[in-house]
Image (cartoon, rainbow, N blue to C red):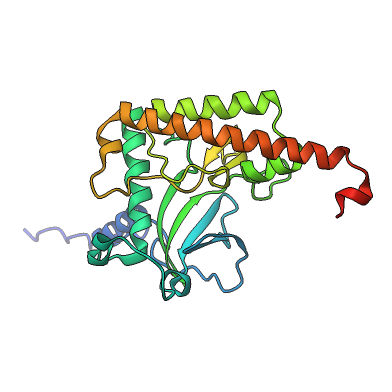
Length: 257
Protein backbone atom coordinates (compact mmCIF):
# COMPACT_ATOMS: atom_id res chain seq x y z
CA UNK A 1 0.00 0.00 0.00
CA UNK A 2 1.21 3.41 -0.86
CA UNK A 3 1.65 5.51 2.31
CA UNK A 4 -0.43 8.66 2.44
CA UNK A 5 1.32 11.81 1.37
CA UNK A 6 2.58 13.86 4.32
CA UNK A 7 0.98 17.25 4.70
CA UNK A 8 3.69 19.85 4.38
CA UNK A 9 4.15 21.95 7.53
CA UNK A 10 2.77 25.44 7.07
CA UNK A 11 4.52 28.09 9.15
CA UNK A 12 2.17 30.05 11.38
CA UNK A 13 2.93 33.60 10.46
CA UNK A 14 0.84 34.81 13.40
CA UNK A 15 2.96 33.08 16.06
CA UNK A 16 6.35 34.60 16.82
CA UNK A 17 9.39 32.38 16.70
CA UNK A 18 11.29 31.49 19.90
CA UNK A 19 14.07 33.95 19.12
CA UNK A 20 11.51 36.71 18.69
CA UNK A 21 9.86 35.80 22.00
CA UNK A 22 13.21 36.09 23.80
CA UNK A 23 13.84 39.46 22.17
CA UNK A 24 10.39 40.70 23.16
CA UNK A 25 10.81 39.54 26.74
CA UNK A 26 14.16 41.33 26.97
CA UNK A 27 12.66 44.51 25.53
CA UNK A 28 9.82 44.43 28.07
CA UNK A 29 12.22 43.86 30.98
CA UNK A 30 14.54 46.66 29.93
CA UNK A 31 13.72 50.28 30.81
CA UNK A 32 13.65 52.21 27.51
CA UNK A 33 16.51 54.68 27.16
CA UNK A 34 17.68 54.07 30.73
CA UNK A 35 21.27 54.90 29.82
CA UNK A 36 20.78 57.58 27.22
CA UNK A 37 22.73 60.79 27.78
CA UNK A 38 20.31 63.58 28.68
CA UNK A 39 21.16 66.80 26.86
CA UNK A 40 21.25 69.70 29.31
CA UNK A 41 22.75 72.30 26.97
CA UNK A 42 19.37 74.03 26.63
CA UNK A 43 18.02 73.16 30.07
CA UNK A 44 17.37 75.93 32.57
CA UNK A 45 19.38 76.12 35.79
CA UNK A 46 16.89 76.77 38.61
CA UNK A 47 19.32 76.80 41.55
CA UNK A 48 23.05 76.86 42.26
CA UNK A 49 24.97 75.94 45.39
CA UNK A 50 28.60 75.99 46.40
CA UNK A 51 29.41 72.90 44.32
CA UNK A 52 26.26 71.95 42.38
CA UNK A 53 23.83 73.30 39.82
CA UNK A 54 20.21 72.14 39.60
CA UNK A 55 18.65 71.83 36.14
CA UNK A 56 15.08 71.34 35.06
CA UNK A 57 14.72 67.93 33.43
CA UNK A 58 14.30 68.62 29.69
CA UNK A 59 11.53 66.02 29.19
CA UNK A 60 10.03 65.20 32.60
CA UNK A 61 8.28 68.13 34.35
CA UNK A 62 8.25 66.25 37.67
CA UNK A 63 12.04 66.03 37.92
CA UNK A 64 15.12 68.16 38.49
CA UNK A 65 18.71 67.06 37.89
CA UNK A 66 21.53 67.90 40.31
CA UNK A 67 24.94 68.24 38.65
CA UNK A 68 28.34 68.76 40.27
CA UNK A 69 29.93 71.93 38.92
CA UNK A 70 33.54 70.81 38.67
CA UNK A 71 34.86 74.35 38.20
CA UNK A 72 33.45 75.48 41.53
CA UNK A 73 34.14 72.19 43.29
CA UNK A 74 37.83 72.39 42.33
CA UNK A 75 38.36 76.08 43.01
CA UNK A 76 41.81 76.82 44.48
CA UNK A 77 41.70 77.38 48.20
CA UNK A 78 38.53 75.35 48.79
CA UNK A 79 38.98 73.53 52.09
CA UNK A 80 38.26 69.84 52.40
CA UNK A 81 38.58 67.46 55.35
CA UNK A 82 41.70 65.32 55.12
CA UNK A 83 39.79 62.04 54.79
CA UNK A 84 37.84 63.35 51.78
CA UNK A 85 41.06 63.44 49.76
CA UNK A 86 40.98 59.65 49.68
CA UNK A 87 37.47 59.45 48.19
CA UNK A 88 37.62 58.27 44.59
CA UNK A 89 34.24 59.81 43.82
CA UNK A 90 35.55 63.26 44.85
CA UNK A 91 32.83 65.94 44.83
CA UNK A 92 30.27 63.38 43.64
CA UNK A 93 30.31 61.82 47.11
CA UNK A 94 27.39 64.12 47.92
CA UNK A 95 25.28 61.90 45.64
CA UNK A 96 26.19 58.86 47.75
CA UNK A 97 25.44 60.78 50.95
CA UNK A 98 21.97 61.76 49.76
CA UNK A 99 21.24 58.30 48.35
CA UNK A 100 22.25 56.64 51.63
CA UNK A 101 19.98 58.96 53.60
CA UNK A 102 17.05 58.50 51.23
CA UNK A 103 17.39 54.71 51.24
CA UNK A 104 17.92 54.48 55.01
CA UNK A 105 14.96 56.64 55.99
CA UNK A 106 12.65 55.10 53.38
CA UNK A 107 13.45 51.60 54.64
CA UNK A 108 13.01 52.63 58.28
CA UNK A 109 9.64 54.21 57.52
CA UNK A 110 8.65 51.15 55.46
CA UNK A 111 7.23 53.71 53.03
CA UNK A 112 6.27 52.33 49.60
CA UNK A 113 6.02 55.90 48.27
CA UNK A 114 9.48 56.87 49.60
CA UNK A 115 10.43 59.36 52.28
CA UNK A 116 8.01 62.18 51.48
CA UNK A 117 9.75 64.57 53.88
CA UNK A 118 12.44 64.88 51.21
CA UNK A 119 12.48 65.74 47.57
CA UNK A 120 12.37 62.07 46.53
CA UNK A 121 15.23 60.60 44.50
CA UNK A 122 14.47 59.00 41.12
CA UNK A 123 18.02 57.77 40.46
CA UNK A 124 21.32 58.50 38.78
CA UNK A 125 21.32 59.71 35.18
CA UNK A 126 23.92 60.33 32.49
CA UNK A 127 23.88 63.87 31.12
CA UNK A 128 25.85 66.09 28.78
CA UNK A 129 27.14 67.88 31.90
CA UNK A 130 28.26 64.69 33.64
CA UNK A 131 26.73 62.28 36.11
CA UNK A 132 23.52 63.64 37.62
CA UNK A 133 21.08 62.86 40.39
CA UNK A 134 17.43 63.03 39.32
CA UNK A 135 15.17 64.27 42.11
CA UNK A 136 11.53 65.22 42.58
CA UNK A 137 10.58 68.75 41.55
CA UNK A 138 8.65 70.56 44.27
CA UNK A 139 6.47 73.29 42.73
CA UNK A 140 4.42 76.32 43.76
CA UNK A 141 0.75 76.82 42.91
CA UNK A 142 1.69 77.96 39.39
CA UNK A 143 3.80 74.89 38.65
CA UNK A 144 7.12 76.73 38.94
CA UNK A 145 9.98 75.62 41.17
CA UNK A 146 8.89 76.11 44.77
CA UNK A 147 10.44 78.92 46.83
CA UNK A 148 12.69 78.21 49.77
CA UNK A 149 11.46 78.75 53.30
CA UNK A 150 13.87 81.66 53.50
CA UNK A 151 12.30 83.31 50.44
CA UNK A 152 8.78 82.81 51.80
CA UNK A 153 9.62 84.42 55.15
CA UNK A 154 11.46 87.31 53.50
CA UNK A 155 8.45 87.99 51.29
CA UNK A 156 5.54 87.29 53.63
CA UNK A 157 6.84 87.21 57.19
CA UNK A 158 6.73 84.35 59.69
CA UNK A 159 3.13 84.00 60.88
CA UNK A 160 2.05 81.62 63.64
CA UNK A 161 0.63 79.05 61.21
CA UNK A 162 3.93 78.78 59.33
CA UNK A 163 5.84 78.67 62.62
CA UNK A 164 3.78 75.65 63.73
CA UNK A 165 4.26 74.02 60.33
CA UNK A 166 8.04 74.42 60.53
CA UNK A 167 8.17 72.99 64.06
CA UNK A 168 6.01 70.01 63.06
CA UNK A 169 8.31 69.45 60.08
CA UNK A 170 11.40 69.34 62.27
CA UNK A 171 9.70 66.95 64.69
CA UNK A 172 8.81 64.70 61.73
CA UNK A 173 12.46 64.80 60.60
CA UNK A 174 13.63 63.62 64.01
CA UNK A 175 10.99 60.88 64.17
CA UNK A 176 12.14 59.62 60.79
CA UNK A 177 15.79 59.87 61.91
CA UNK A 178 16.73 62.15 59.03
CA UNK A 179 20.31 63.46 59.30
CA UNK A 180 19.90 67.18 58.55
CA UNK A 181 23.48 68.45 58.53
CA UNK A 182 23.19 71.93 57.07
CA UNK A 183 20.16 73.23 58.98
CA UNK A 184 19.19 76.26 56.92
CA UNK A 185 15.97 77.77 55.60
CA UNK A 186 17.62 77.70 52.16
CA UNK A 187 17.51 73.90 52.17
CA UNK A 188 13.75 73.67 52.80
CA UNK A 189 11.16 74.53 50.15
CA UNK A 190 7.46 75.30 50.49
CA UNK A 191 5.24 73.78 47.81
CA UNK A 192 3.66 70.65 46.37
CA UNK A 193 5.37 67.38 45.52
CA UNK A 194 4.76 65.24 42.43
CA UNK A 195 1.66 63.77 44.11
CA UNK A 196 0.21 67.24 44.61
CA UNK A 197 0.65 67.18 48.40
CA UNK A 198 1.40 70.60 49.90
CA UNK A 199 4.00 70.98 52.65
CA UNK A 200 7.61 71.60 53.54
CA UNK A 201 10.27 69.50 51.81
CA UNK A 202 13.97 69.02 52.46
CA UNK A 203 15.92 69.44 49.22
CA UNK A 204 19.56 69.75 50.27
CA UNK A 205 21.96 69.57 53.21
CA UNK A 206 21.01 66.08 54.43
CA UNK A 207 22.84 62.79 54.85
CA UNK A 208 25.69 61.63 57.13
CA UNK A 209 28.94 63.50 56.43
CA UNK A 210 30.90 62.95 59.64
CA UNK A 211 33.88 60.59 59.61
CA UNK A 212 32.26 58.86 62.59
CA UNK A 213 28.50 59.07 61.89
CA UNK A 214 27.30 59.36 65.48
CA UNK A 215 23.99 60.97 64.45
CA UNK A 216 23.27 58.08 62.12
CA UNK A 217 24.05 55.62 64.89
CA UNK A 218 21.97 57.35 67.55
CA UNK A 219 18.45 58.60 66.91
CA UNK A 220 18.35 60.42 70.27
CA UNK A 221 21.62 62.28 69.59
CA UNK A 222 20.31 63.28 66.17
CA UNK A 223 17.01 64.48 67.70
CA UNK A 224 18.77 66.66 70.27
CA UNK A 225 21.03 68.21 67.65
CA UNK A 226 18.25 68.91 65.15
CA UNK A 227 15.91 70.46 67.73
CA UNK A 228 18.75 72.61 69.06
CA UNK A 229 19.40 73.81 65.53
CA UNK A 230 15.66 74.33 65.07
CA UNK A 231 15.54 76.76 68.00
CA UNK A 232 18.39 78.76 66.43
CA UNK A 233 16.67 78.73 63.04
CA UNK A 234 13.33 79.77 64.52
CA UNK A 235 14.98 82.84 66.04
CA UNK A 236 16.52 83.79 62.70
CA UNK A 237 13.19 83.34 60.91
CA UNK A 238 11.38 85.47 63.49
CA UNK A 239 13.85 88.31 63.00
CA UNK A 240 13.68 87.90 59.22
CA UNK A 241 9.88 87.89 59.30
CA UNK A 242 9.72 90.98 61.51
CA UNK A 243 12.04 92.81 59.11
CA UNK A 244 9.87 91.78 56.15
CA UNK A 245 6.73 93.12 57.85
CA UNK A 246 8.44 96.38 58.82
CA UNK A 247 9.53 96.93 55.22
CA UNK A 248 5.98 96.29 54.00
CA UNK A 249 4.52 98.77 56.47
CA UNK A 250 7.16 101.42 55.74
CA UNK A 251 6.46 104.16 53.17
CA UNK A 252 7.55 103.24 49.65
CA UNK A 253 10.26 105.89 49.70
CA UNK A 254 11.85 104.35 52.79
CA UNK A 255 11.38 100.72 51.66
CA UNK A 256 13.31 101.41 48.48
CA UNK A 257 16.32 102.80 50.33
